[in-house]
Image (cartoon, rainbow, N blue to C red; front, side):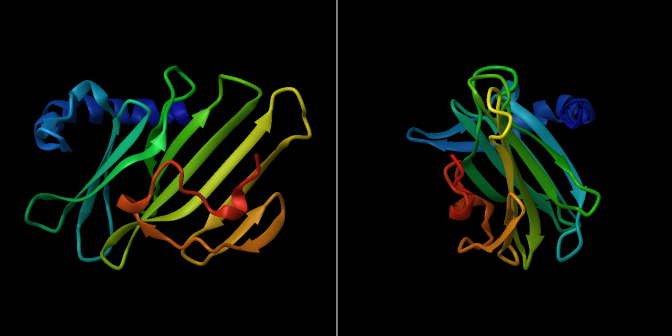
Length: 197
């Protein structure tokens, strides 16, 4: 249900913002600058945040196999792009393999990706983005998985990358992966302790 709430709550913002964003959000290609089509925008979140900026706007854009994240910040002088994470999350070709995002009540951002439709191994990944020390960072990582045939093959890995503390199927650990700027995260990045398949 959280996915549907997310989609419906973002639908009006995405619709109203898509034309403007297709003009303002740009990606680099080999020929120079290419505009992001409005139809590729998977979601838009605008949220207040504490610190040296007043608010941020995150834009999730579908790419061929993943999702790019653009982050804009407003410190009182208008929107400025502060980060672009290329192919930050995976996405597939059908419903149940799409990425989406939502803001939390604490001013952070959660980005979801999943495979809930194909094969035995189903999963959901959640990245928590937080603004810390003037940088938008991947501050949390959660990976849940289950096997559609084997009811005992399921679990979750949840890691606070700011503290390094994690839990894999009720066993605690300390990860070697640190919180990092969003632009340094790729769809292959994950705490090594969360390698479960």
